[in-house]
Amino acid sequence: MTGALARIARRLAAGALAALALLPAALAADMNKTLRVGFVVDVTGFDPQGMSDAYSGYVMRSIFDSAFAYDYLARPYKLVPNTAEALPVVTDGGKTFTFKVKKGIHFSPDPAFKGQRRELTAHDYVYSYKRLLDPKVRSPNMDLLQDRVVGADALIDQAKKSGKFDYDAKLEGLQALDRYTVQLKLSRPDYNLLDNMTHWAMGAVAREVIEAYGDSGGWAVDHPVGTGPYVIKEWRKGSKVVLEASPTFREVVFPAGSDPADKALAAAMKGKRIPAIGRVEINIIEESNPRFLAFDSNQLDFVYVPADFINRVIADGKLKPEFARRGIQWQRMVEPSFTYTFFNMEDPTIGGYTQEKIALRRAILLGYNVNEEIRVIRQGQAMPATQPIPPGLPGHDPNLKRPDPYNPAQAKGLLDRFGYKDCDGDGFRELPGCKPLVLKLWTEPDALSRQFDELWKRSMDAIGIKTDFVKQKWPDTLKEARAGKVVAWQLGGIAAVREGESFLNHLYSKMIGTSNYGNFRLAEYDRIFEQAQLLPDGPERNKLYRKLADYHYTHAPAMLGVFRYSNVLLHPWVMGWKSHSFEQYPWWFLDIDAARQAAAK
Image (cartoon, rainbow, N blue to C red; front, side):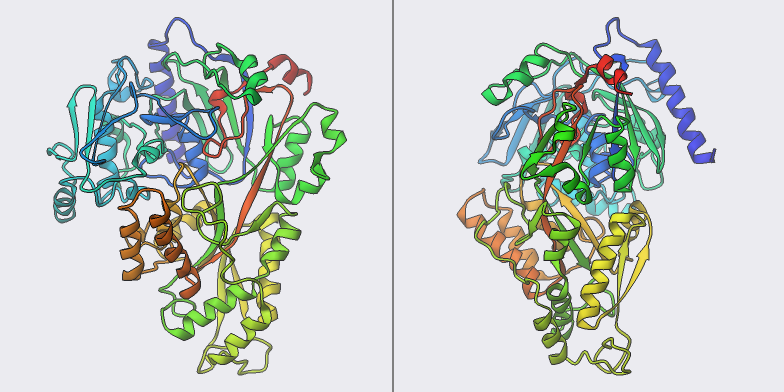
């Protein structure tokens, strides 16, 4: 065991001992029940203000509590209080938000609390929200509060000069008015704030924990302590995450629901305290074949069907008989997500804002065969992305056409026009002036990624552009991307909350080093983006969103990929599942028939 992993093990053991000392008389969850889950990629850590990747977020949602949440069953999605007593009181023309924290909610036990039961208070939310603003933390989620908390700019400037953010300094725009009352005062209305306050990044952490276990950057990635339904029992990087029901979680009952379509689900879960399942085992299974086979052999309790296995499961829009006979459930939905490939605008080969560089990137976009990706690799479970904002989210325009549809002839003509010629007769083009031209693409070492690599190579070979693939694990590439060291990378974004703005900030210059991995800087884009932030959802804001989407055509800083469908299969012993756009792994709402699960092994 490495030194770092040994420290993690010691911390987890210490936390477990502390938990035993404070164990309440009645634990809602059945510790004999285990839900088995498979993740496509590894998690990167469990600091809610520090992490931005979706899979870490899925875990953090069950550890840390945001003040508000979405009703699990309600459609359309409806905001409800979580740790807050009620939805916030909004005053001052939409610029002041005040809410009260419920009394009697406690963090899971930890040595940092020195043997005391630690109640969640307004001060914890104030501290956690301030972490989003701390320049040292460099939160990838800083946009949730950036540039609009009254008085924050001065505090941030001081922190940049001194190297230390003063968490004890009074901040007019972010205060605990008393032990349980939080107030946010903004310099302008924020029409996305209520939804953003359901995000894991606005979950409450305890200052004692961050100061006890934080690294040099202020992140506590391997020691999560929250007030949520689960705690980390084990984390083996690249292999497994094990969660156990928190011994101090408050009493919460499965929601009643009002939709007739949920009648059977609501009846099966009626009156049950959550979480009902004592243990969740998350296995990192990157390859689609072993992941699907683990479900098929009853080793996983549910699975999002890998794209390359759709035809084995679905035929003519129905679940195939061999799965239906086993009582397996199938649910399908359009994800609030899109895939894209960013290009590093600071790279000397592919980056830049001159006409010949834009022409090169546009030729790549025109030359990539997105139709083959959908037909062959995704087996029809996607549609070409027409804009950054996915269907179902505010700002999506169903009438938009794809700006650069597949057209290799047009791509070659564009390259010819701007001087990208084959100077040495090897079949591949060089840059103007006959300097080498190689498109470097970062990719993962798994079977599905290899299919994408082959498609990229075929597509680029057809227009005369040589490709080179850099193979490494997803978390490692994410670190390099944040540091601006990745030239091009195909990845996806999925909505964590009900708003479309976050799908536009990957080109916002203030997000360089976080979600703007391509280092795109354009004053006009920033101006329009900031103008859109001042408007509520509606036609006027949608016009600005349309202008921002057009930059994918005019400057080609990223290639739009696809909007995906998700298909989930669940074994018949899984209860309580309802596909949810913002809760893709809602294990705290689930229950299992343990006897039926055991009989299937």
